[in-house]
Amino acid sequence: MIGSGSWATALAKLLLDNNDRLIWYFRSAERIDDFIKYKRNMSYLSDVVFDTARIDFTSDIDEACLKADTIVICVPSPFVKGEAEKITTDISVKNIVSAVKGIVPDDNMIVTDWFVERFGCDVANLMVIGGPCHAEEVALDRLSYLTIGARDEEKGRAFASCIAGKKLKTILSSDVEGIEYAAVLKNVYAIAGGVVSGMKMGDNFMAMLACNAAREMRRFIDTVSPMENRDVCLSAYLGDLLVTAYSRFSRNHNFGSMIGKGYGVKAAMMEMEMVAEGYYGTRCMHQINKKVNVSMPIMECMYSILYQGVTPRRAIRNITSVLE
Image (tube, rainbow, N blue to C red; front, side, top):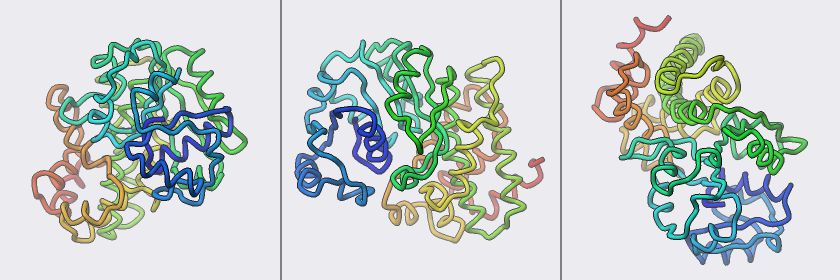
């Protein structure tokens, strides 16, 4: 496990429910000491108690990657590149699972593509985790569903068995790229949902926004990663979009809500205790869409608010005539 935030902690809980040992990389040796002392991650999901005797903690990322057969990347997207480029050992033959739900800034690449380009990883060894699954609800053992995207069905099934349980159901998919892009876009649309909520525009308009966001997502994904019989109504696409756009657990929704209530973008970011991935994802998707030119009025609306200084009221008003 590379990552030590709330989602990484929730996934670590699932992994230890089904496996004997876990190698867990933390950047800070001091945080490792605290974890071992208190048997919990004191910074995130601190109510979850771990059997630390079954965890091999390390602050050496090469040591973690060398020992592991499967590497789960679970850090906020803005930090993926900085953490991964510390790796000097050969990971080209390792199984790589992205739980990032974001895009690599500057490079504007989904995480699996970036690992192929940077480390020469085999695409057959690359997997993604998608679907509507808040870390907080996993920690509370509430029934949740995760989709494992894998080009190699056998590998996907094997990893799914590592996290599945009575309260965590798994779904297999071969649509690795589609799931990754959906995970990026749902954060953008979650900010939009938060803005609308903060402006108190009501449930009727929120429903229209969500429906149009799903269609916008489908248009983009079908353009950049064509695939027969892709159904965006499945949980890895629409389900993740809905739970992120509506839920108070969603940091992207909460970030957008503050902006809708009148906070400036920088002020809202300072108020956030965790990273709102959609802020960075919006800029990346705007830049990517310059090349593919898909009609994405909601995404562009968020870009105008977050990066061009357009007021939320004006920006939302500009898209009301194109929703259907």
